[in-house]
Each structure stands twice: as C-alpha cells, then as structure tokens.
Length: 284
Image (cartoon, rainbow, N blue to C red; front, side, top):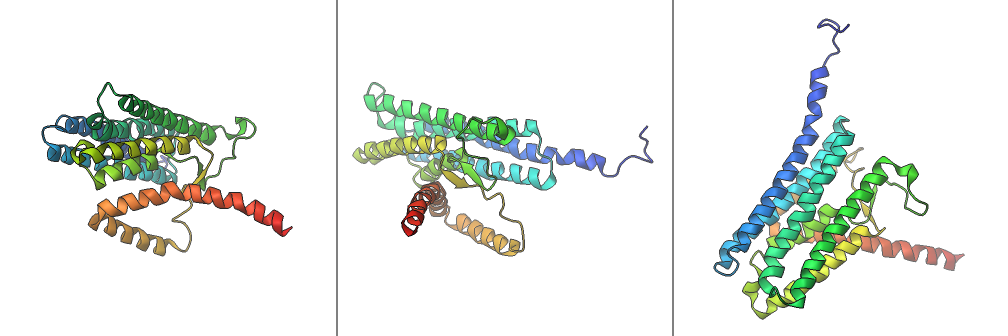
C-alpha cells in the first residue's frame, strides 16, 4: 500500500507534465478558431471597406502562423518530457484539421475566391472545388501520418518506411503557413486590385492544387526532429534567435521566404535523389 512516506517523489509533477503538450495543442485549436472568425469578419467588409478587411485577414494569417508555432512546440515538449500519449497524437491531428485545413480554406475563400469571382461563374465553382480538394488532401495526409506513426508494420507493400528525420509528403502546417504568409504579405482582398485581382486569384488556385498534390505525394520533407541535440545546440540557438529577430522586424518578407523555402526544398531534394542513381549508373 502506498503511503505518504513511501510515495514515489515527483509523481504529481510527472502527471502535471502531461498537461503541457495538451495546453499547446489547445492553443493551436484556439488560433484556428480565431482565424476562422476573423476570416468571416473580414469578408463582411470586402466591398464596403477593403482596409478594414485587410486588418481582419492579416490577423487571421498571424493566428495561423502562431498555430504553427504551438503545433511545433507541443510535439517537441512531449518528446523532451517523455509525455507523448496516444490520445495526444489523435488530439493533435484533429486540431490540425481545424487550424491548417479549415482555417486557411476560410481565409483564402474570404480573401481571394469570393470577392473576385461571381458565384454563378465557373471560376468560382472551380475555386470552391480546389478548396475542398485541399481539405481532403490535408485530411488524407494526416490520416496517413497517424497510420505510419502508430502501426508501421502493417502498411501495405511499397509504402515508404517510417523515417523520423523526414516526413512523407508535405505536412499540412507548412502548406497552410505558405497561404497565411501570402495573406500577411498582402492582406487587402483581391477585389481591391481591380483586373489584376482575378489574375492573383487564379495563381492562388494553382497554388492550392500544387499544395494538395504535394501533401499526398511521397516526396520527403525534413522534420527537423533531430535538430537541437548534440554539441551544436549553441549554434542552433543563435540561429533561432537571429531568425526570430528578423521575423519580428520583417515579418512580411521573412515568413513568406521561409514558407517558400520549406515547401520547395522537398521538390529540390526529390530531383537530386532522382539524378543520383543515374549518375551512379553512368560511373559504373
């Protein structure tokens, strides 16, 4: 029988540690919730007051960016404190569907698709279709990630092996982050740009299709889970501090640059991996 005298030390503290990753995930959900609300609020004034809409859309984009930060922290804290649980993994995936699936769809619809195209036009219908397919691809990407993380041995033959250093397919947070950074860079609704607004809206539709394909692809993306360990921690901390200060001073430029670099690095990596075997065969 366990008494106060022989009770294991720090048992209560250990239980409290399990709440920390969950708190970050809850903050992730909160940011997604606010992003959806402010996207709707911004759409109310896209025709009457584009400047007011720009304020709301910018806030929604920032909320998605903060959600990416919380989503990164909850997994890293769980690994550092060894408090990862099965329910935490499922809760994190459900949070990602809201914050990085539904929230960016609401933002892009309110900022680009709905203000630019007439509801009866084919372009409007195709834009809504692409938004839906982005959500479906993101949900499929999360389901595949959960399957690979929890039951790697029962995957069908031919599925890439689980690699903790890399993700299979573009993760949904960077996909949402790229769209949010674009809105943060130019928060005014696209109808405020006149005839060029339709051109920009078509570019966003192309981007939606590309991001959806990348999420369900087998292209590898670095997870950075192995970073922050070893003797080079000091250099990593200095790099994070420098990037953080640059984001604070030049957020419009730094966020979109970082988002583009991450989304494109997997494609570049895939191209190099395709060329390496040919080079080895040529040498042989």
